[in-house]
Length: 601
Image 1 (cartoon, rainbow, N blue to C red):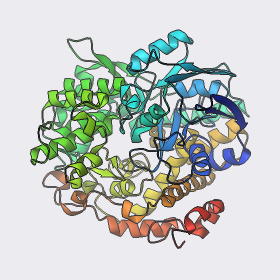
Image 2 (cartoon, rainbow, N blue to C red; image 1 turned 60 degrees about the vertical axis):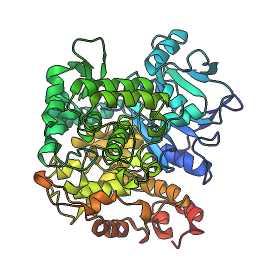
Image 3 (tube, one colour; image 1 turned 180 degrees about the vertical axis):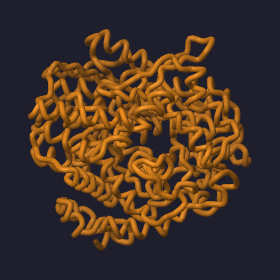
């Protein structure tokens, strides 16, 4: 669309600026554009919850074009949970309407002097009073905002958790979709911003409609033939992974104390389909439709999910087999505006602290009622929930046992025990935003055999494969497309879509190079705030304590072996910092000045 909307909430100033050719060509949009803006404009050391932090919502060059899985948007900020650069993206329909409003990105600065919401309708942008909706949950907030703006508007908002600056709070759009991780909801709450509503009538220009149609058809054909995107995800949703991960002995159980859960089938995708499923749900421009509209039998409680990560975090991680209780925890997270991974993992951490006598009155493993109550307490910052609202690492440190926090860089780990999946361990450790499976989804090759199966216990070749997947994923997040498209589509598909949509020549290698550039820029952002090799680690339990049972029994993560090779292949120092020559090669020479004073690069 060629335009960036800027809103200074402190000054109530609304302006626009052009999207430059360099920004579009070198960073695409979404995650890459957000990183470029944040790096250039945010000084080091800024408090993430201060008015000086920025919150950037960005679409990609394929958003709104109808390209397969293109119904997403990206949120970038400095995380209050991790202190790192952070992007979180979400599906649904909000991103498409933001693009159709005529904007490639919205950059939010400052802090409103009272609760506010933003209404963007084509060229008109307003900052409105939100006193009357402050305190409402995300569902009531969306309904109220739509009644005051337009019935067809799409709304992204925070719930009570974001208002209270809970460090594991999220931004919810379309009631059930979450930009979930890293406390982006807390940043929005710190700005006194309750919601953003968007509606637009502009269609993005497609440079070569005929060739774009061919490219889209080829991509859809790939999606329709891949067994993951054709069968597994549509039929059972993401929770199809529960039994798969449990079978290989890498389903983290009782806060990563074990890798096998005896009651896994009770919380599996197959059981969700049998007991809770109402219908499949798809994001904009998606044929996979992995979403689940669900309802708890015998009640009026309904919503979307739980997804795999949610089922794992409130299920195996907490030792809970009560599927209805897990679904209720999931619904509450969406209503309060909480990240389900960090919320479930933090409760699991509290359960271990309680079991070992380090947290008086804490929840117990297997207690579904206490788990659900903890979600409410976190959302309200009440009682023990006020401690849990800070995330697992701060909780565990407060009680003298940081080793009980299963996190990297302060971000709670998702549902894959890397002791049984070596490359996933390297991906967790080197993720720029903290423990994240989506930076480089090594499960695809190490477990699912896509595009080929590699030995999950070996370390050989894992560094190069991790780097490749991280770079492709960075480009995918910048287009902004769904991660699941990567099961079926390759960089050639993406390049074909981009070239025909934009008229700019792109090759598969161009996209990998763009992803490499973005990954290095994020790394420099973190390095200037003191992040280095010491932070590219895993909880000591995963490095020193072998899994006690299952098909990954007696394994730990051989991280150092992979990390040295990873840094060498990345062109980084032994301390994990990009060198001057590497930054020059990826067209980030200007970035080296910001870390040269702290590191020998």
